[in-house]
Length: 113
Length: 112
Image 1 (cartoon, chains in turn green, purple):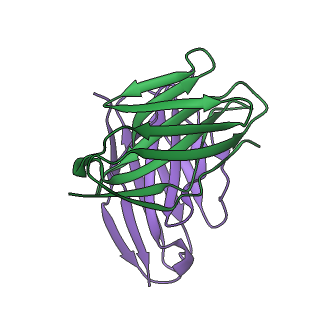
Image 2: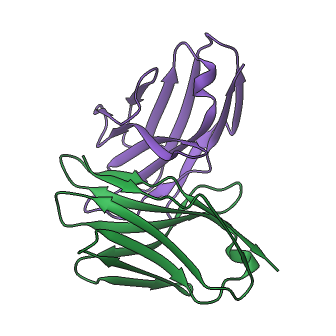
């Protein structure tokens, strides 16, 4: 089945630093790739969606792109703030059979003021 | 705004105990999911459903049962709880065509 690999377990940055999180994916269908953010004490919420139709998503200063050649997708932000401290998950929609959402292991971002 | 409500927020039980986690969504969504979240593993799919009376097996189903009684309600059952099932459990719902997956606030389960 489809799979997603997210290797960066924890990232610590200072305010105004550049953020880059990378995931790799495996799918037999056209990918719909997602980034979710989880703040403390809350459930994950959708941050960005990228498909083969749009190639790029932008929201709240975050940008998501994907590279079909390397089957990877990225989340980046030019200048992080302390309020961006959260856990970020990449995910893939698995269309084989019924809809399933396959998540990466998550990256815990800590931004120091 | 889409809404997914889970109960209880916290639950403590003993090994061998019987636990039911509840989830209700008011989004009129067809799909509902149960995930567990553990450090280093992210969100892992336990069971899911695409409508009342339907049940699909996820990626980590052992030791769990689920039942979808109505469009709105999806339950996760642990009939003989074990310490390995100590985790943070999330319910989520989505419509057709890979619409946004909406999560509840989670249930933290501790099995002693």
